[in-house]
Image: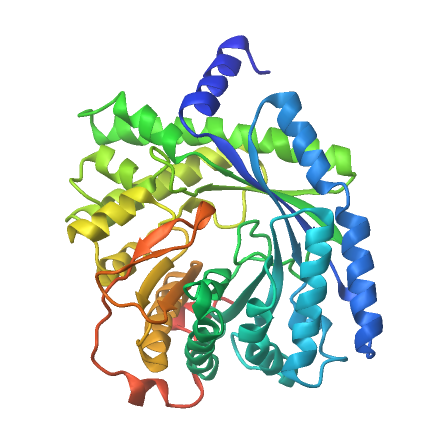
Length: 454
C-alpha cells in the first residue's frame, strides 16, 4: 500500500527534482504483415501499427493527468524491418519506402519516435540485412521519426567484423546525407552488442521476435532525484551512500510500475518491463555526471569515475529489481554526452575524453552515446571505435552500444546543436592513428571462451 508520506515524497520528486516517466513504448509485432509485394506489405504495416497505437498518446496523457506524473515521450517499437521486408525488398530503395511508411504512421498516431528499422547480424548477414543496412542513410535522411539500430555482436556469437566495417561506412554516409542539419541522422542510429529485445529507449528500441504480438514497456528516469537524495548524505560512508541510491531507485521504479500497469490496463496490452535507466536531459539538475560529482568527484572523468559509476549502476539495479518483478531493457545509468549538461561541462573542462568514456562503458548500462566527433574522421576509425565497444560487451556479457556523430564540416573546439532532448555537444578529439589494416580483415571475432555454458 502507498501511504500519504510516499505520495508527498513522489510529488516533491516530480515538482522539484525532474522525476518523469521518460517513455511509454508500445512494442508491435509485424511478423503477420510479411508479404512478397512491397505495396501490400507497406499497407499491412501501416494498418497494423495504426490500429495498435491509435490510442497510445491519448492514454499516456490521461495517465499523466490522473496521477500527476509527467510522461515525456510516447513511442513505438516494431519487429526488425530486415526480417519484415526480406521477401519484398530487392534493393535499398525498397527498404527506404518501408521507412517512409513507418514515419507516416508515427506522425498519424502522434508518437515522437518509432524504432525497429533494424537488422540483427551478430554472426552473419542475409541479403536482406545487407540491403537494409545500405538503406539506412537514405531512410534516416527522408524521415523525421524513424530510428535505426544494428546488433553487431553478442557473447554467444562473437563480433561480426564485416558488419562492423560496413557500419563505419554507413555512419559516415548518414552524416553526409544529413550534413545540412549537423549530421542529425547519426543521432537516430545506434549499433549494439548483446541488444535486448525489450528496450523502450531510442534510438535502439525494437520489438524482439520472442515477444508477444503487442507489449507495453516503460522507461523511467530520475537522475535529479538521486542527486538530491545523495546531497543529504554528503560525506557519509559507502554503506550509507549505496543504501541511499538503492532506496531512491526503488521509489522511482515504483512510479514506472504504476504507469506501466495503468497503460497496460487501459490499452488492453500485456505489461512487459520497466526499464529503470538514469537517462539524463540537458536540463540543469537532471544529470548523471552531477551524481558522480555528488559522490565526490570534481568532474566526471576524474580518477575514481569508473568506480563511482560502477557503484551507481549496481545500486540502481538492486533498488529496481526490488520494486518490480519485471525490470528489463537496459536499466542502470546512461552516460550520453550531448544529453547531459554535466558531461558537456566535463568535456569542456578537459576532464573527460573519449578514452575515459570507453572505460566507463565497462560498468554502465549502455556505451558511447551521443558523442560528436570531427566530420573528417575516417570510416575505418569509426569502425575501430565500434569494435572496441563491441568487445567490451561481448567479453563482459553486457549490452554495449555506440551512437557517434561525425559532424560534417566541424572539428575539435566547435559545438553542434541538436535541440530538444538531444541537447548540444562539443566536438571531441579522436585518436588519429590508423586501424585500417585491422578493420579490413574479413570474417568475425569468435565468441569468448566463457560463452560456452551448455
